[in-house]
Length: 246
Image (cartoon, rainbow, N blue to C red; front, side):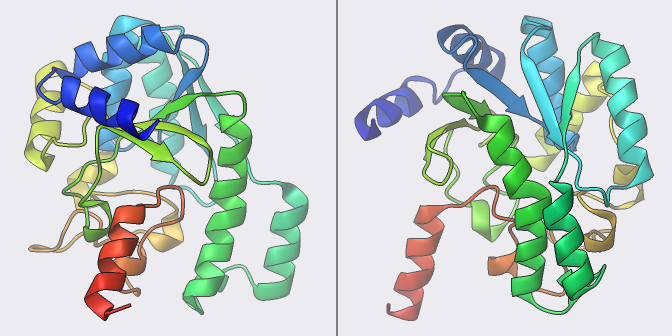
């Protein structure tokens, strides 16, 4: 598997994103899906995928703490591209137990609490969404944060046991927005207010001048811990251990 992934990464290194998508959507037809957060990168991919096949399965995770603007964007996106976006929600029993035990805003108290909240609101629904798939498409870019520096086009997702395709892995922030403007891709109006990376409302703020794209996510934590767990990079983990002499 490792050799095949390396081979495909080399093969498609200089290939336009639309051609990459066409290959994998055909090769894994019926076993591939796109996970969208409705962020800028994901809206670019939605535009491309809809131009190839409007029947491709697209899903999103609703944590129950999202900005109102997200829901309007879901409707606008579906209507624009004549597609369906399936929504996955947290299990109500786990959610009720967590909130009743630790409080409604537990994530501010500790990294452990925040990760527990992400586990219940994001990771568990994701596992259900990925059932039966061989590969999932994501909008990760390598320059988004220090935790994503080593993002590749195609990776093996160890925690979910399937392939992960990152078609925009080597795009820059400016490339994403040039594409959005050129192709009139619908996007979240919060981006125009400085919210560059958007997730749950209590855990997202606007990004200040000079900060990286994901600085507005979990801003009270150190950069190396600022992932919800959906995307784990073993390469980054090994890098951190080397720096610490572990």
